[in-house]
Length: 376
Ligand code: SF4
Image (cartoon, rainbow, N blue to C red; front, side, top):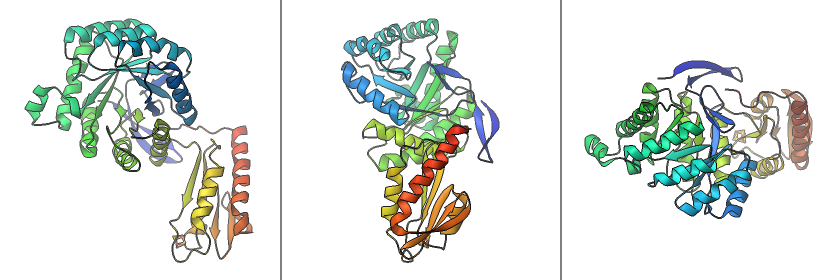
């Protein structure tokens, strides 16, 4: 079991599990490191050009570790060329054939992920573990409710959280027997409540860092809702060291979703957060249009910044005052707030321009004296 530590984030104390640190290339997972964001390419890995192009887009969106599927020998053979053209750590996703894991290690990948249900022969596992240990490459034990060992399914009567944790425990036992401890564990299920319980049960027993995810979460918005509840709940309990949101969508959307989840649980502060009311019969401006325009025109800002776009004086002044800047709208006009003070009244048509200009000024000020963007 990991030690619980208290950390301060924006004046709020949060509890985090202090897990064992594991290095995936240049990125630390666990051991108090910021919760990192992962995604997975959807290209054919052997198509090096398309895969590298997608990884560059993911990296630009904020992905910090990327995984590629390695189903065939030709994919394993492409890994070296991919690795040479990207700057974030590369993870090889292996199923069934241990020889592909050996080839991936030879190619210089930064982490191997396999599913204990899919490589069951201990001798084959030992071959991978010995090679990974020699190269100081960590391994993620990726337990998935959909591919548990039939013996465990029989023992627990199905893919229960307890069965998932026992699957991870068995594999950890094997790896530890060979002196291997650079382990990250995931316990994914498409059932959100099972996933939450599995991670929390695991954290009560082990100090290995965890990779959080709801598997096969589906398209937007369903997948985002399921992932936000699953990943967000586990993180709110102080558990989880790296996350991947699985969506049936462009993987760049997974990265955006992951950032939103980390923001919502107070583990990241980068970029603009729009605080906006849902509007109602009291509102006398086109609030949705204002929100959309402010959001679109501030996406380039990476410094942490809160902008309140509020429809009237009921909650408007309160929210605008505690944000970095904001408006409380009236009939065709709005009171403008900057860093807690009312600085004047502007016409509805000037709201977007004024907020964007002020946001850029505050961001520039923060660039000059940077805050810690990834406090935990
Ligand atoms: S802030 Fe005003 S306009 Fe917005 S939802 Fe509340 S009452 Fe309605």
